[in-house]
Image (cartoon, rainbow, N blue to C red; front, side):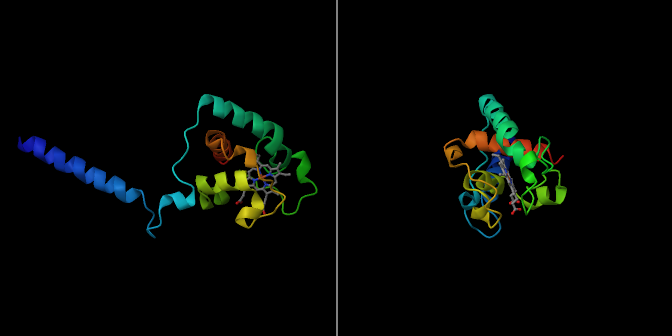
Amino acid sequence: MSRFRSSAVLAFGAVLLAGCGERPADGAPRAASGGATPVVSSADRAEARQLFDTLCSTCHGNNGHGDGPASAGLEPKPRSFADRQWQASVDDAHIRTVITLGGAAVGKSPNMPPQPQLKSRPGVVQGLAEIIRAQGR
Ligand code: HEC
């Protein structure tokens, strides 16, 4: 019985801790920074890969080094996703925002184009974020 009690107390504590994790230190609801990480299905992942290879890579390069064929005339250059300092400075919610709303929406170059058609495809957007993260490893 006392065993059951202490595990119940532990479980309750874990729920409290998990609850705390829902909010960043400043107390703002996490939804403000993009919400929970969207689920990525294997179809989303395949679509994200195709989109990266046909669209994003024209500027960011096949391996995300910022050296795609369309990068030549651009200033600032497309972000190199291999830059670990940059990787550490952004969260996935930021990456998702840049992809759907474009560079201008986050104070970056308007040459980074928005993809408004992806607003209803959070799994595909997160799939792109996964590709970007993998290129920073
Ligand atoms: C026409 C060229 C072009 C295409 C196509 C393009 N980008 Fe970009 N992207 C840029 C440029 C230029 C920047 C740098 C903006 C800056 O630093 O001001 C950038 C920056 C970014 C950033 C970093 C933003 C930040 O806050 O530092 C991400 C993430 C990104 N692009 C993702 C993508 C993805 C994913 C795609 C494909 C869906 C894509 N881009 C397609 C040009 C492009």
